[in-house]
Length: 130
Image (cartoon, helix red, strand yellow):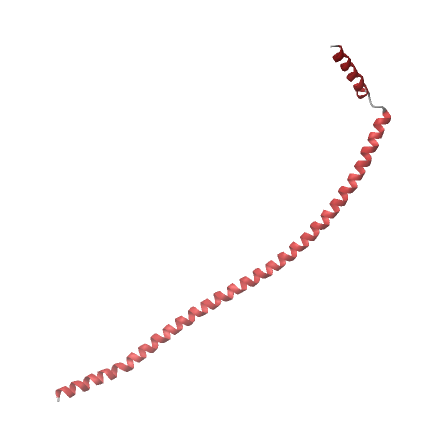
């Protein structure tokens, strides 16, 4: 029991300097250290901020050029679609005109063939009656 008591007193004596207060000189040294680290950190933050700003500006210019190129491509695609649509309509009209032409030609062919058919029919009837 004496050993425990002696050891506890010994530990309390060792911990006594930790219970002491800071002097004004100690506090001033701490302030100086904090100000020095604050100044260093501020300069580092400013450098990083400037670096990031320049990188962002570079990326913005690249995005602008890509946007311009994309708009050019979109305009070209729209123009090609318009031409394709125009050719499709033209092709439809050509097919329609060919169909109408074929219909008119077939009507003329039927009109010309009909009198010949009537004459051959009359000729055969005359030949049979004789």
